[in-house]
Image 1: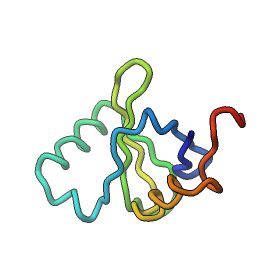
Image 2: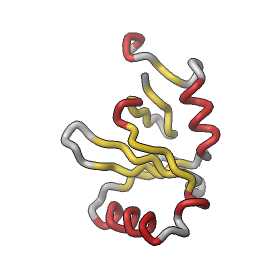
Image 3: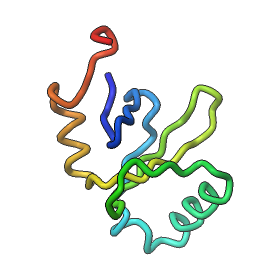
Image 4: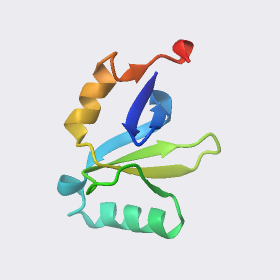
Length: 93
């Protein structure tokens, strides 16, 4: 199954490491360091035109971590993950 992150970006569930709220996690020095390092290495992808509310850490087939910044909050993404209307089964592709 896939989760829609915004702007025509969908990720398979098995590639998603975690979904995090930007407001509640960026106060941590470790989180800021992770995001800064990912941005420096070109592994941050914006999937919205509005102010990002969450970030999604995914692992690629090559084993690299990619960070997606999404305009959707974590509650919206969680609802989409639980809802068949926003999730797409791989067999339906």
